[in-house]
Length: 99
Image 1: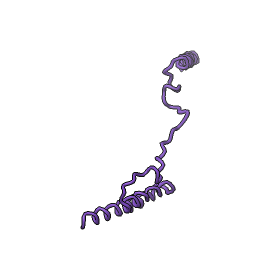
Image 2 (image 1 turned 90 degrees about the vertical axis):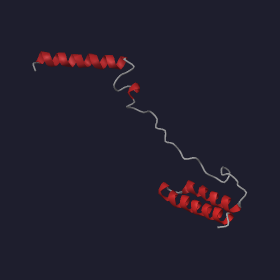
Image 3 (image 1 turned 120 degrees about the horizontal axis):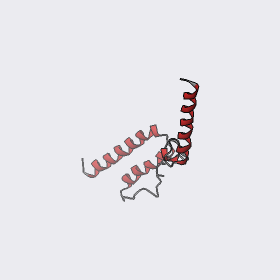
Image 4 (image 1 turned 180 degrees about the horizontal axis):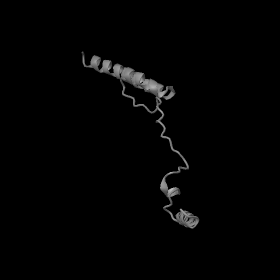
């Protein structure tokens, strides 16, 4: 490629960049989605005794109350809590059904 061809090519690139900066659909502008000013991380809802339903059955309410423990635990420990709650609810239902 000769110098004049290189210069023409660079001029073309400059014009393209300038026109894309003016355009609302620029390659690296806000419309491209490549840059995010603020990242929103979804937060788990806060579970507390006030937000849990009251069933009137002490064993069910106690088992559901265990869900409040999730707030302070790392995610990988949530499974143990869910399994404990499920086991306790299952036992309560079986007892109430007379099994």
